[in-house]
Length: 253
Image 1 (tube, rainbow, N blue to C red):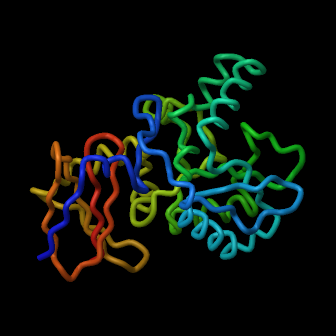
Image 2: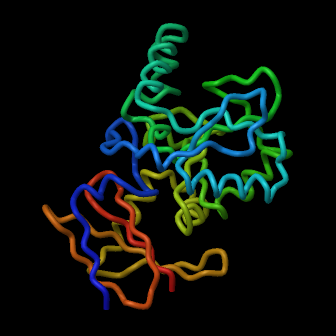
């Protein structure tokens, strides 16, 4: 067995952070963890993402042969950038629109570096509501997204849970096997994290087979100071905080 010790602050880091109106981002991503996407066309501004997220997205673009057909519109935003976007939207488009489509500063997934807004390369491109249809190259992206760890974050019919209007252009990296499980169940991230609480460290764990690999998942509520977990020594694993009060463990079986 191997022992894993996690401090309380690690609840606020990882691929499965829940960032919404109720749960603000508590821990800013370090500058060295951000890099630009490398497949952008000259006529569009550079878009930055968390390093692994950028690599996986570039691989997905290559897999579907998107070339210049898909445009990354918005990725990582600093707090100042989110403040400016929010203020500009309020001034130009009003309170109702802004509250539906623009997260308030400190509550935006874009500040995590794990979210990307995409558009079909067709002018004009709307920065706040880019056009990403469900056919053609956009459909191919959607069909492969979950296999690469991306989910459509704000689905129609989930507004009561997410607090955001449907955004078919906004994708969030959560990694595997989480994206595939969410896709199979139709979960938004709020629902998925609640679902995982049904599989505590001390009880029955969730076991799934995704992309020809077997995974074991469980949830552990963080202790006040240090959370100690005992795992089989031979199994690779990942852990992510949920930005609420606990950790999600993912073991490769």
